[in-house]
Image (tube, rainbow, N blue to C red):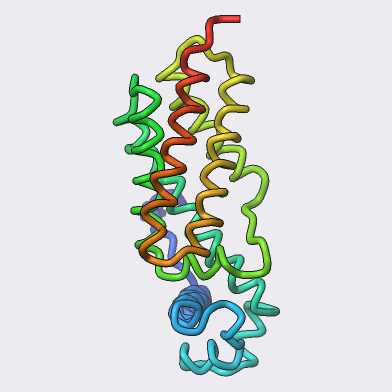
Length: 208
C-alpha cells in the first residue's frame, strides 16, 4: 500500500491551539470595545475578562497586563495599515506633491477611523510602537512610493523623506485627537498644506 508523503497530509491544528487562538481573539475584541467605551485608562483587566466571558486568571495567562493587551491590539492595527497602503500607493504613482499629500492624509484618516480603538490608543499615556523590522519595512514601502513620484531621489534621501512624512502625520494625529469635531477638519486642512509644501520642495530637488 502506498504511504502518502508527509507533504500530502493536510496540517491540522491541535484543538488546544485553536482554543488558544479564539481566546486571544476574544480578549482583544473585548479590550477593543472597552477602550472605545471607557478609554484606555478607564479599562481594567477584570472588565476585559468579564466582557470576553473568561476568568481573570485565563486573561493573565495570555496577557500579563493592560499594556500588553493594548500593544497586541496596536500591532494588529499597524499590520492592517501596512497591508492597506500597498494598493493605495500604486494609485499615487507619478502624483503631484499636492495630490500625494492630500491622498496620504485622507487615506490614513479613513483607515484609522474604521479601527474602533485606534484613537483611544493614540491618546493613551503609553507609546505603543511596532517592532523595528516592521517599522522599517513600512518606511521602505513609503520610500518607494515617493521615488515613483520623484525618481531623482536616491534611497537615502527618499527614506529620510518617508520618515519626515510619517512624523508630520504623527503631529497631525496628536492635534487631531486633542481637537473637537469642528476643529478636526481645520487640523487636517492645515497639515495637508504643511505636507504638500514639504513634498513640493522634495519633489523639485535636482539629482545630486
